[in-house]
Image (cartoon, rainbow, N blue to C red; front, top):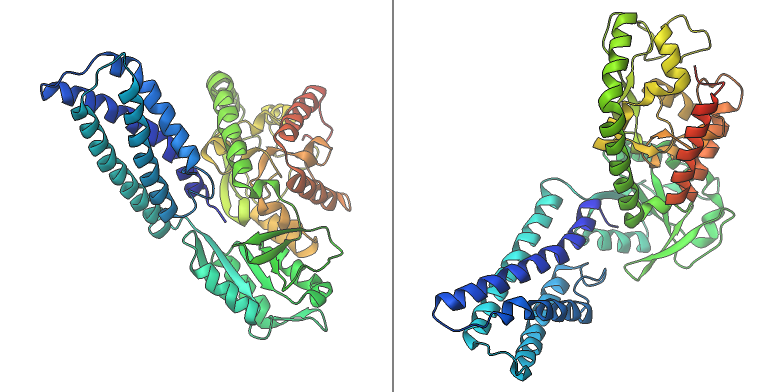
Amino acid sequence: MQTRYLYLLRYILPVTDVIMLNAIYFLAYHATIYFGKYVPYELIQHYVVVCNLIWMFNALLFGLYSEYGSRKLERIYRGTFRSVLSHFFLFSIYLLFEKDVEFSRTFLVIFYVLLAIFFALNRFIGTALQYTLINRFNATKKVAVMGLNDTGYRLAEYLKKQYNVSFYGFIGSNDNGFNYNTGLLSDVAVDDMKLAAANGVKDLYVSVPPERMSKIHTLVAEADKQCLRLKFIPDIAGSLSTPYTISYMGGEFPVITLRYEPLEKMGNRFKKRLFDIVFSGLVILFIMSWLYPIIAILIKLQSPGPVLFKQLRSGRNDEPFWCLKFRSMKMNKDSDKKQATKDDDRITAIGKFLRKSSLDELPQFFNVFFGSMSVVGPRPHMLSHTEEYKAIISQFMVRHFMKPGITGWAQVNGFRGETKEDGAMEKRVRHDIWYLENWTGMLDVKIIFMTVINVMKGEDNAY
């Protein structure tokens, strides 16, 4: 249960360690000369490479930067102490048996004293930063538990001890907050789930007897509606009619997940975000830098009003954000509730061209660059449409488990624009969920290429 902040700290640690190791090495070299001791130039010219190689060897040997080694603070401190001590012995022995260079014991003393001090200071700052992120900026994932049974209570105690998790509490007032005989949720459980989602709960862990897993359909439907991810904690691994994956939390609790989400893995999320930053940055720098003022002038000449159209839309985890577009309509009062239709009299001449060529979406690369959108993902809807569709379409809110995109799997398969036909939105949702469960980096590249091809050919639904 990582957060992006703690995930980045794991990769910041080796970089800062190597920088600090080399800085202290050079500082010790010049400090030794300052104290009047002889230090050969070869020590700083050639043997700094050996010093770095020995440090990398020790870090690998003691698992200092491994996922397991960096998971707990005590392991980081223990691994650091062992790495520094081993480095002292190995590097000293190497210099002792190297006959081509004379070295000063003063250099070694200064180097390792400074190394110990600064590494301790570095770890202290890292610890302080981590606690600041967790406590002040709330860089934790908020979770809740459903199931007032032994497993549920044990699970709650485990979650309370995790420093990167904020335990919200229990949901439901009876044995499991859910009647497995009738397959119905209690009113208390429904209200608790709504309140939990409103208070930022992302994951709901349900402690459920395996023999009762077949009665969870209404629970799954309500969780999808409230944008809550369900994680089932059975006493033993059971079976489900729906495809699922099983993982283990804390080496003790088996967790059944109903759908596979590649972007739940922090490494995949990091890769996608890096791609978004680079791709959107290039578009802003090399395309929008000259195209933006041209389109802005044309919009102003067509009709009075702002160049950009801003609208609140539903983002990841159903959090609203300001979605940017080039204004393609005359100023009107229905823009926040009425979809654009074919031959819509609100659309200006330049607006028709922008919509047909999809150039009206270009400002959304600013949304991507600043993190509220992704280049590829489900298209965001107006808040009023989200409320409308989630009440009538099963699993509609599942598409909000990920960031909305400028283009998406549904759009390149023809499901874009107005959704007046029966079943059009259901098909769009099915495509969005398929993308959610089958994401790869190459799939994003494929969708981008398909989008470019569709724009060049022209799309019937682009109006």
